Length: 478
Image (cartoon, rainbow, N blue to C red; front, side):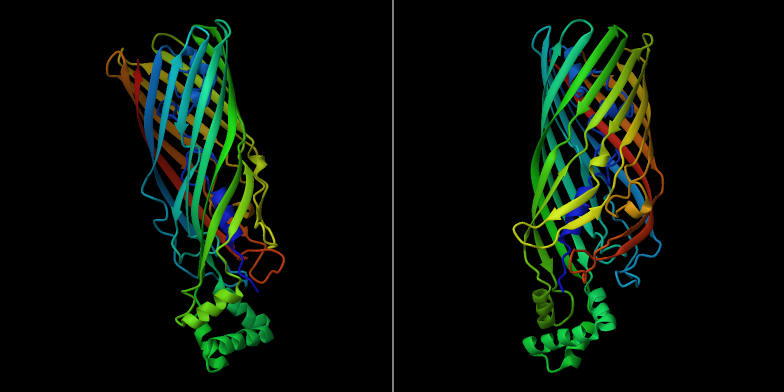
């Protein structure tokens, strides 16, 4: 019998890329404070260097040299109500309620720059956070066999160039280098395995206890059995990182001075997440000899792991209309190919350990955002926006505890205030309301399944989540 839980840990990392994020599925969603103020409806506005992310063709609209640097603070409000999580044996996982598992706040910085070379060519670059997650449920909560903690950080560098063909047509192209780093942990269901052996495999249990007695110097089966009577969980931790590369395209059609239409495409990025794993059975019992024996027979090794995946590509269509000297309206529709994530296949090269397959079966999604600007004065521009964002998860049975995602509504307010002729400040506030996320996820593989890996747990519960986002950015024109 082997405890092979590393695949679930890696799978959790890959499926949890946006637990504390603004957009559904993977994408963090707030790459610009100015964009946040209109719920990211402003892709065709192309009014500052953050157009590098939304539509690189918009660089052709920017004069001189410009920089924009900002940060968005994400303040989560989330609760989880367990509705009957069980071990692979069918008994309750026990444990404590999930409390204070989301951080008080998470900060995501962004930095953009642009330069107009001549009437036709412009260049720019962006540094932003595409994905992010941070949760700490603790080692005793009811869903610990699915996940105890996760921290995922990423950053992308996106240099871009734009070409203005004439007064109507502009084209943009960018390349992106994306770094991803994950740290996470998961409990190992030693108590469930001990109970299974005692109930369904008594001969194996006797051999198990006898092995402890013989190899660790315990006097008799009774002493070994007593040491295991109060067996506690083991634990595994993992870290991994990788660089991946992609590109983005943009097209901007300027119908007249007041109206623009845009199209944008951001490619998928291939990642090979490589990491190290540490297994810890030191807290299973109070007898170090028993813990060492369990560690030995479990096949515990500090090993490597590999997961290959591709992030989803996005396609966006957007419009901007300057209605009069004070009012402007804008809209954006973004399609995301989340269906790239069907089943995560975790490998263990060069060993012959069986792969772990985590069912996700995500669906493609749409995001619709509407926004408006109001020119209150020469120095003050007010913004507002609304967005509806679909979640990629299909059902409660395919919703993992690491990504309690659901459809959400975003309400945003923002402002741009000119400090002087060359500099300004952007401010933004967003409130996000998620539908309740119901989870009823069963891992098909248990510690006693010889052909695959997993805890075999079923995690059942309901998540209620709200997010607030506060953003501030500084802009300067040379």
